[in-house]
Image (cartoon, rainbow, N blue to C red; front, side, top):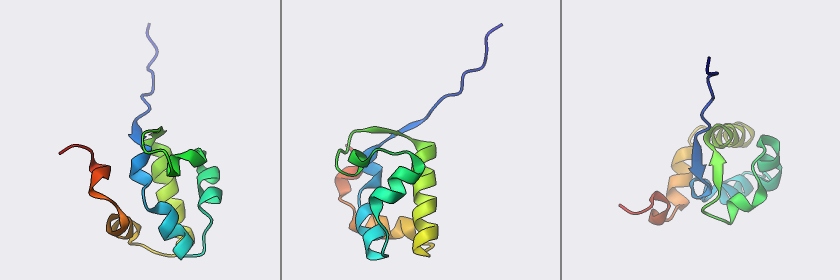
Length: 88
């Protein structure tokens, strides 16, 4: 029989745009957060790296929890460039 292979969903690292700014604004060190969830540091500067969505979700959760904010998504949206969405 064939084994079931888990599909790893990937996101462009551009989805992390602004995270470093928001994290620093709340006294957090972005490199420490990324390392904690296994995302390479260059994901903050290279927009086209492929990052597992599970790790992205873990990073957002960790950042939100450590910063003590529940509106991280809104804060990221406010500092983002429209180009993060890709071609529309």
